Amino acid sequence: MPTKTSVATRKVTPARKATGKKTKTKLVSVAPVESVAPVESSDSFKVEVLAKKRRQRPRQRAFDEIYPDIEERLTVAYKAIQEARKLYNQLNTSHKKAVHTNKTRENVVRTPTILFDQALVDYFKSRLNESELFVNRRNNGVIEEIQLTDLSSESRVHRTDVTQLFSKVFRKHDILDPSDGRVIIYQNDDDLVKLLTTGNYDPKYQGDVDAINAGTHRLTIFNIQRVTNHHLSKVDLTTTDESVVEEQV
Image 1 (tube, rainbow, N blue to C red):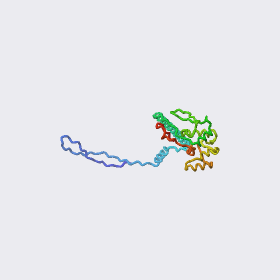
Image 2 (image 1 turned 30 degrees about the vertical axis):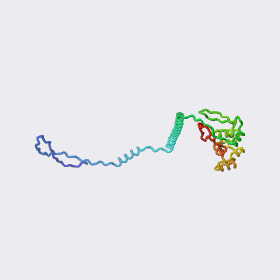
Image 3 (image 1 turned 60 degrees about the vertical axis):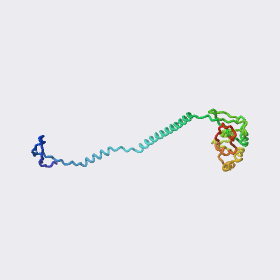
């Protein structure tokens, strides 16, 4: 409710003239100001405000509604990652191909530097006929067929020629594992077992030799040269023409 107020007075000083003379101060009456009491919020108003705030909260989604949404988003993200990985691999392949084609390389003439001993020569000649004694070599991007009908302990070959000849023997005589074409069933070839376990082999391969004799060694086309290395030798290039480039073996 409005309260009573008394009449207040204050001094009003008129503006001074430019002459600089002093003026008299007059007392002017001021109208009374009514003070208003603060309005207190009722309990019903507070409840109404709280109800509005509760109505503004987002609706809580059910589990059956949220789970499919998450699964769908994860599936889309996984497919996007897979596509990005494929594009990245294609980018690497394209980059390597571009670098390889743009790289200037000299045509290096390579010469065979491997010799067979007589035991290995006899094994290949006993397993392959003359028409099968040949290897394929790449020369300046062109594959050439090299005949080895006169194969002897003086014939120079590459390391890759050794692998090709072994592969021909194993395919011709069916001594490769049908379930895994890399594995050699050497137990069916007594001459091969003798070739692998006799000779002046490196003592560090004694365990492999014992396993071959026991028939428990896992022999493959990739590790066979490790146990036949004692049947191979390198050409002494000190007596050859200096212009011949030695192949790394």
